[in-house]
Length: 142
Image (tube, rainbow, N blue to C red; front, side):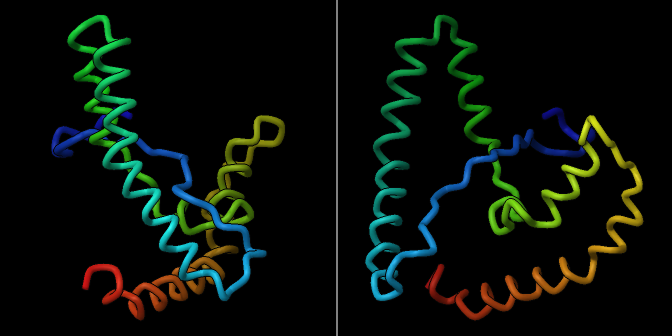
């Protein structure tokens, strides 16, 4: 994505990847073990898999110009995952908004009315998330 304006210090590119999914049907007694395995897989992926794929394979084998490697760094360094995408769900109001606005068959540009109708539910959901994160803040970065 281009920068919003000249004051923006770097580029940001949204990612639509969800980092991990654990089925809701797992035995709650195994959640701690599952969490440890998921965390370990993500850590090793970051330390070993990403460098092997990007640094060795993409930059050394497939990049035919020096600018190719620089572009891969720009893409990697500026990729973000939206909070709403990560902690929402596919039936969330966030996704419904995009379905409503960008549906080519029946586009609807009445954003203000849509937001007014959905604001209370979304505000309540964000408050629930913030309560959870506040309660668990000391477990993330002790």
